[in-house]
Each structure stands twice: as C-alpha cells, then as structure tokens.
Image (cartoon, rainbow, N blue to C red):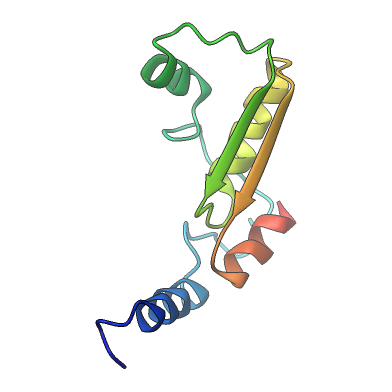
Length: 105
C-alpha cells in the first residue's frame, strides 16, 4: 500500500466504513431516526445558510454526499414533508453497508 496513492487511500477509507457504518445504528433500530441536529435540522439550515429567509413552499433540492446510515437524510426528508416543501433529496455514500442500512430506513 502506497499512502501517496489516492486509490489506496480510497480503498482504506471504504474498508473502514464497511466495517464500521456511521453513524452507528443499534441492532433492532435500523429503521429509527435521530433527533434533529445540524446538518439535518431545517431551522438551522434556514438560519445559517439562508439567514432565515428561505421560503420552503418553493422546491428545495438537497445532495447528501457521504450520507452514512441515512439518519440525517431521513430526518431532513421528514421535516421537509412536514412543512409541505416540494423537495428532492439525493443520497450518496461510498460504503455499501451504510447504503444498505440507509435503504432500510
């Protein structure tokens, strides 16, 4: 393994996240969600990114790159649905195990 080679580093990072999906999900709670917190709290997103001026009645698109086990993505989708925001969320993650858990949510 060459630490200077980005392909080796990518393989090493992928292996780590396959072995330890993040954020950790307790067995039996694969479908559960976590409380709202940055970066998935709609009020915080509106405050810090849009200075409180985002109109969530208008379409909202989100790219979640490195979405892990999907807790934040599901939480954000729930909040957008609750406020009636027409939205599209795209979830990506390098780890097949994290994606498997996220898809169960």
